[in-house]
Length: 406
Image (cartoon, rainbow, N blue to C red; front, side, top):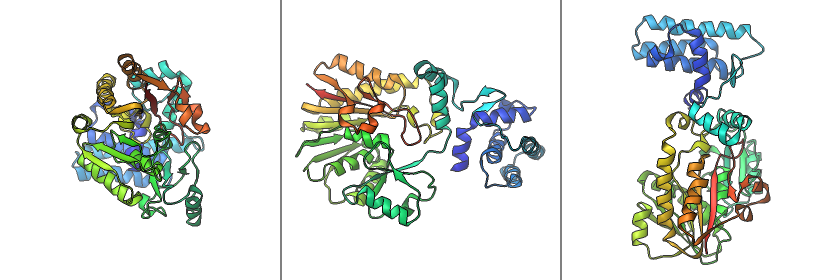
């Protein structure tokens, strides 16, 4: 995973180096040779625990196993060994991953860079890209229905796991250098925590203030992170909670998480899409959360393939789907109900523009200020009433809007 994700995060930089070392243009390289060289170069420049000789040998051996023509084995060997020789000559100063030949290397496609520079400026774009090119931190959400954050921190300390409380979410804990199995963290089997970024933790709070005996819907439940958080927040309030998710594999994970975290809490699952659920549902909800499908440009650090797989025309396609979801959702919301719309995108087409279009056709809704439901530490991420942090070490890029039916 480290090798694959690392190459995806540093692809542009690695290709720049490769193009310098190879007389053959990258587009003409044998595809397997290209990727073997990329993995080797990543190990040479970014992994300190792997000897240079091992990186070279494994790259050459992989070509042999794959049946790559023998003449290319020497090519792979030569490119990597020449890279090592040049790199050793520059010691102790290494090439900065964000720079090459005095040019800024963003490791992101140009269409995305151009957009971000237009919307956020050059300095912020460089910062976001630099953040996306790092390995993200592991963030936990404490299950306060089972244990306090202070008590879980004490358990982590006893097991010598470096940690500190989250900066923004009241139940967040950051594990800055943990790289092991999630199941090995103390308290996993007991349901003491869920892995969840602080932005996602804060999004669920926007449904507040929760009404005692109220009815709430997670309309795009996915793996159930926000559903389980809603169950946690609803302890002692006698809430009726519903979750909608069409994909069976995600539903299975949702049930597993529920059984581990809060098996005593009751909620209803609908296996299907929101439109089908709405056609059968006779309930008017007090609050609905729509964590809509999106381009995911705010979580590129966690999912580095996104930057290379998305195209700019995708944004309007997502927007159409998002508006349909909101139109379907508003039919299920009762008087004075709260509708929270969220994405893990940084793009206006999927965020602010969606909300403005929805409000223009639904005058019975009003936009409220997200800051009123968030901890003070998170107020810095609220702009024009929207919750919209950019990627940083302990929070993902995110967007959320809170609307009320008048």
